Length: 150
Image (tube, rainbow, N blue to C red; front, side, top):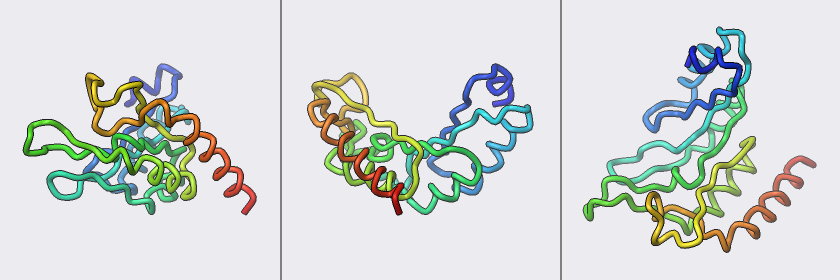
């Protein structure tokens, strides 16, 4: 992290799926101690049991105290360690998680998309079909505008 911060580029710290939001404050501080304030935090969800990820939306405002927060919507919907040997996912929840992220103050979203998720080389089980991207983004911008007026 220190070497990355010294490049002068933005350092994107991905919250470990086992870490608390509060623990990210220490990682951010390590970057800031180099003299750089170019640091973001990406939340990818938290492991829940052995085969599911959840997003604790309380973590977004907590981590925003330290740095801008990006919500990795699609990776937080992964279902690792499935009995079939391939990571599963919940793509039907992408819109729900993205909307909730905007409402709770996420500064940005990361959403993997593909023209044919079922045949993507990686993470297809939790990708958004690109045909649905424009509508989702339009909805999210409207939600952000509304939230900003409150």
